[in-house]
Every structure is written in structure tokens, then in C-alpha cells.
Length: 491
Length: 138
Image (cartoon, rainbow over all chains, first blue to last red):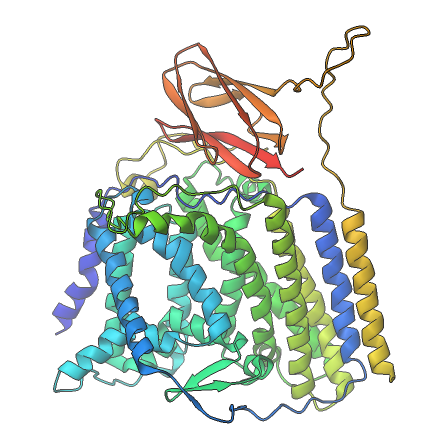
């Protein structure tokens, strides 16, 4: 058993090492211009100003009694079964199509369904629709659908139901989420169809083993990062699904209802902030200046970007702890700093979501168009199933100034929502009104830091990163000093 | 009307004023004024302004000039004169313009910068990014 298990885990890794990746190029261009200075200044000004407005609204306001937890519409809405089955089928279909096109399709990223679907469509649509329409992922998660099917087909229970180690908490999900960010932003081969497909296969294997060992729901809740992400994002939606029924709830109550969350989830939220930020940060002049200080600028991009992804959340976390400590001291609460941090972490979600959408929506609108021709030819082998294979991507419709304004608008909105939420939580947690208000000055300052940093990142000039000759194998990149110079030029 | 409503209305009024200020104080991007050569007395028929010229020099697959990020304003005519020291293909993303390069021969590309955004240009054959053209909105 152990031996078979081992081979199941290592098989995909062995295959991976045998691959010779070329460096991807040409996918993921969004043509977005950096924010001009005047907009950055106005945006930052608005952020500081609106923070005071929100704080002002809460002064003098007494403790908020949370509304009744679930507001059910008079007639309970049932989830219609036929559309649900169809959507589940579509989910499964897309899951297998992504893997198959990645493994066996044309390996030119531009002509392959897999990387275009995952990076330019799936992850963005997943985040936005989960926030809008609630936790539908619990029904459409392909891992769960497959597992349910297997359970139905087999007479004996599939799950061994070994007790999930308590200390693991949500850490597996945090680790996989970090791996996901690394693959997307730092690995250098995110757009390589076959490698991407291998990663999906590896992740699926681990997820299935997790479900087999610890039970389906236990593992999905703690170890499947998309489920954890959906659980967070669906709090923004007024819709809630429980026991095949649809409920309507006030999102504010959903966003604060558990109050204190586990530290591993705090880390997960910090990762949502830091991960997207790193995508902009890795192109900024400051990043290359920091690399130069540590003498890392001549290593390969994979090495320094991987380091960057790993370290990016550190300053975010330290800043959060620092201001949590300040909030604890100012409010004079007897709780520990860690408890304070766990209590308010959920209020960071709007900043994170707003920045994600602001950063990635142009990728969806531009690169996402690739799907129009790829649905006709997902493997990139000359098919024309729906007659759209000749579609040419349009870019003129997305004006740079419209992108700027929407980015600023989204980020400012996210910031206001975050300050509002944090106050709401404070008024619920602290019995003393004065304590609640005092605890929020450090929180508001922290959020101003985070938000202005987001705006600053978007306003940074983009350093042109010239590519370098394709290395013979992945090993030369990872383990040897690169035989080619990596030019860095400041704008 | 209680104090609280007044605060809200006051806050909204201030926000409205800030938004109005924001749009009225928005700086205009400077369009370079190209003066057509003034010939004596003849009434000047509106000439098309001379295109904005960038001379590229590519040596050893690197851009020797101009700087890596070049900026133009939306609607301007742009002229690239490209000289490379080896056989290559020049490709401008977004506008999707490609041109073959011969060693030490100047090649010209002219186009109207009608799409805003940041567009990288590269050596297509060796997949090396040279720099980027930023087309700023009018």
C-alpha cells in the first residue's frame, strides 16, 4: 500500500523532470499602462480622505446588534436540479479538457486551451463569480464531483477517515495556494501547456489522496485551496446555499460572522494580498534595486522571482502584526495581539479582492479572447469546430484611461469596504464603545498603507525584461549559474 | 433632521466636490506641437504634422538606442527607423506589425498610434524583448 502510494505521488514529478521547457512568451500581455502620477496622488488622497469619512460615520454610533443570522426569503428557493447537473457536467468537461489539451495539444502557449483557460479565464471568473454568486464551488468542484461519483459506484466506502491532525488546520491549503502563486508568477513555465497540465494532475492526485485518507469534506475544507478561497469570497455575496436551498443574507453579516479565524487562515488572507501585489512588484524598478543590493540580479529570473514570492508576504504579515499590536495597546483589550489579528483579518478581504480584480480584469478581457478561437481548436491542431478558429484578438476597445479610472475606483471602493467592515467587527467585539473606536485608528492606518501601496504598485514604471536564450533543461536554470547574461535595464 | 443625517449629507457633499475637482483639475497630456515650416504669405493649408521619429539601433540583439520605454500620445503618427546588425524580424505587439531586418540596412515602419496602452517590441526570431512603446491617452 505504502509503496503504491509512493509511486502515485512521485510518478508525475519524475515525468516533470524529464521535460525540457521552453520559456513562454506572448501569452498574458495586457497592454496596461502604469497609472500616471497625478492619478496616483488623487487616488491616495481619496483613500486617506474617505477613511476619515467612514470613521466619522461610526463615531457616536452605538453597538451594532447583528441582524438575524439568516434572512430567508419567504418561500425557500430550491436549487434547480437540471441546470445544476448540466453545470456539473460542464465543470468536469473543462477539467478534463484542460488536462488533455495541456498534455497532448500543441505546445505553443498561444495555441493551447490549457494555459489560456486557467490563467486568463478560470481563476479570474472563479474569483469574481464566487464573490457575486456565493459558494457554488461546493457543487461544481470537479474533485468533489469525481469523488462523489466514485463513492456512488463503489460498494465499499472509499474514504479511510483517518483523523485529520488538528495541528494541520488550514496549512495544506495555504501551502498549495503559495505553490499556485509561485507557478503563476515566478516559475517561468506557467504558460507551458504540458507542465501546467502536470501540475494539475499532481494537485488532483494529492487532493484525491487527501479525500481518501481524511474524508472528503475534511480535506476539501482544510487542504483544497480553491475551496478555502471560495469560502472566503462567497462571503461577499448575498446568496448562500445550504442543503440544496438558496438563502439570501446580508453580506456584511457573512463577512464578519465567524469573527475570530484561525492563524493559518490569517496567513491565507495575507497571501491573497501579497500574491497579486508581487505580480506588479516584480516588474517595478524598486524590485530590481533590491535585487542589486543583495547581488541577486545576475541569477536567473526563476530564482529571484521564486524568492520574491516566498518573501513577499513577510512585510505584509509584519505590518499587520505591528498594527494589531498597536490596536491592542490603544484599545486596552486583555486579548493577545494574535487574537486581535485573527479577529480583524476578515476585514482585509475587500482590499485583496478589489486589487485582484483591478489587476487581472484586463488580462481576462484581452487574453481571455483567446478562448474564442480556442474553443474551436482547443488542441491547436487545426480544428475549426465552431467556425471561430480564425478569430483575431481585439485590443483597441480597452482604453488605457478607462483602465486607470476603473482600477482607482475599485481599489478605493475596496478600501472603504475594508474600513467599514473593521469598524463593524470592532463594534461587535468590544463592549466598550470607546475601546472599539480606539482600536480602529491603527487598523485604518494599516489599511491606508496597504491600499496606497497597491496604488503605488500600479503607478510604477514597468522594467523591460528582455528574455534570454532557451536553456537546454530545467536543471541548468535551477542548479547552475546561468551561462547567459540576464540584462537589467532601468527605464 | 438629526445630527447624524447632517454628517452624512455633509460627507457626501464633500465627496461630490472632490470628484468635481478631480475631473476639472485633470492634467492634459501634452501633445508636442509640430510647427509646419512657415513659408511666406501663402495661407497655410493644414499639413499633416511630421510623424514622431524613433531611430532604433540594434546591436548584438540589444537596443543601443533609443531608451527602452518610448512614449507617444494617442493619435500621433509614429515612424520607426530600425537598423540591426544581423538578420532578424522586428515585431511590435498589439499593433501586430512585423518587419524583416537585414544587416545594417535601415527599415522603416510607420503607423498611427490609435490604440492606447503599453506595447512591447521584440526580436521575433530569438524571442528577445527590446523595449516597449507606451501610447498615452489624449
